[in-house]
Length: 149
Image 1 (cartoon, rainbow, N blue to C red):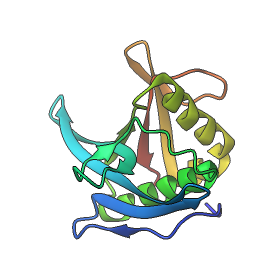
Image 2 (cartoon, rainbow, N blue to C red):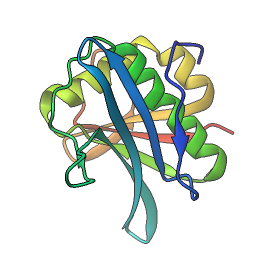
Image 3 (cartoon, rainbow, N blue to C red):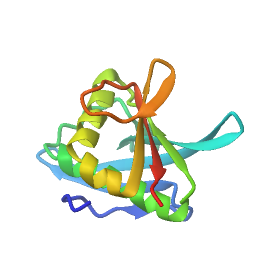
Image 4 (cartoon, rainbow, N blue to C red):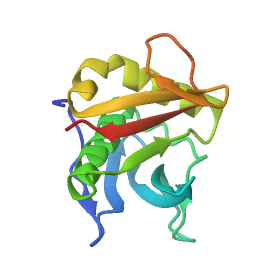
């Protein structure tokens, strides 16, 4: 995926990724976190993303930064997925937006880059309690990514 993106760093175990959004509102620290959870004896990783709250050290996934670099930020998040899958190649990654509008934003980004993304990953969409092969112009509640080997 050859979209413009920010340079990111990672934690020692490659589950947290850090980068700075740079725009009219200044430098805003972003965090992408892959947290494991188990469903039906299978380990999945939830992709959490947001701004680093400097006071609490927590990820704020509800804040609207509006730093006029949305596409670059989303491309950077996608880059962390590829990086994470290098270290955890058997992983199953899920992503659910913290709001309906964020889920829709993720869907728009996946649709716009689907040809590139599908070279590296299998994408599924969650709708009505089930996972489906990702299809253009279908509204999903969440997304799943598998490493394409």
